[in-house]
Length: 152
Image (cartoon, rainbow, N blue to C red; front, top):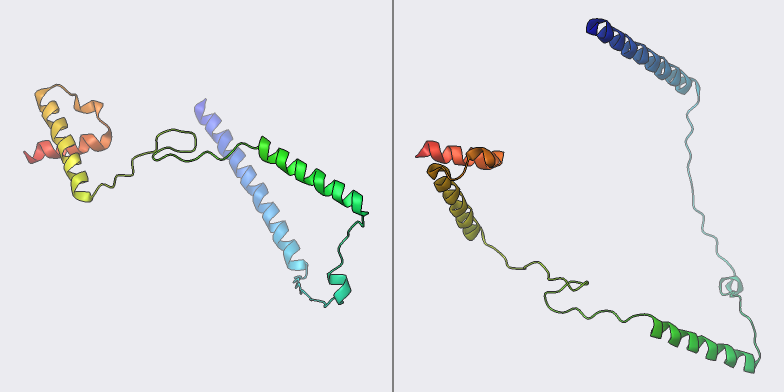
């Protein structure tokens, strides 16, 4: 039964492959018939007269109206400043939300190597003593411990 099912699956794949090839051949024929089009864009800068460049839509207001609008604008700007909370001042070793930042302590290569060697020496000691099963370690740690065991 599985052989028959596998044969049907393979036949279905071949039919799809055949259909795909037909589509690709027809697309290739269309491209061969269609003339190639090349679109070139060219940007032309045109000099504008002086008065068109500086044209700005402005509203001429009477003196009292202009002053009233200026006053209203200043009031709204003050309200905006009152409603927006001030930026939090960063405290040393704290991020934006007040959580402690990660340590910026730089570790040189020799101290890092010493820590790693110390870690694996401790793991090796525990494996030898039978306190730790080597299969509970990840693959890289297992490989390192096995090499250390073989070297001894």
